[in-house]
Length: 184
Image (cartoon, rainbow, N blue to C red; front, side, top):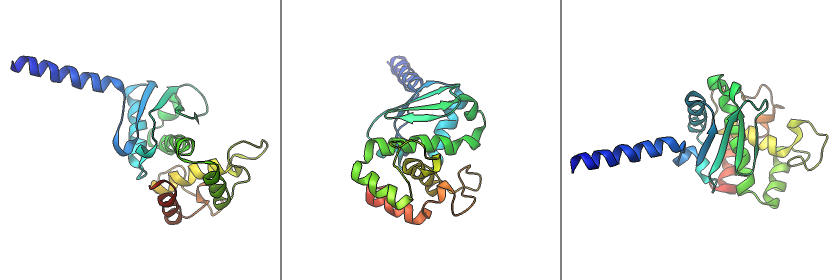
């Protein structure tokens, strides 16, 4: 009997370990690709932030591959494998791409319009071409979220000036706004 229980427990733990899934404040995601070390970087990045990624009401598929430039679409994130090899330096980019999931799943048109105005964007998210990265509200939102919820001195998104993309709003004001908008 004890041997059967032990076997069942080992099987259950192994099954959970192989899914590549995370829960709680770290979000709800599964991995496609990447080494164990790269997956650990993603988990560590999300756990370093005080933002509750679990507010996103969907399971996100995180692809780790040599994609060059990391990006996100609704329900999916593509992270460059070489970037993740940089360790803690990559954490801001991981959080940035997961921040877009907050937009995709929790914001409606009115929220996007409001945030775009408050964050100083010229267009929310590539509906109008020709603007620079920092001129899109969705990018200013993602960068500001990263800095506001992980204000570490080694955060690659630490603002260098008041005009930096991640300085679109002070962290305290932005966190208060997110409490209003999504309950974060």
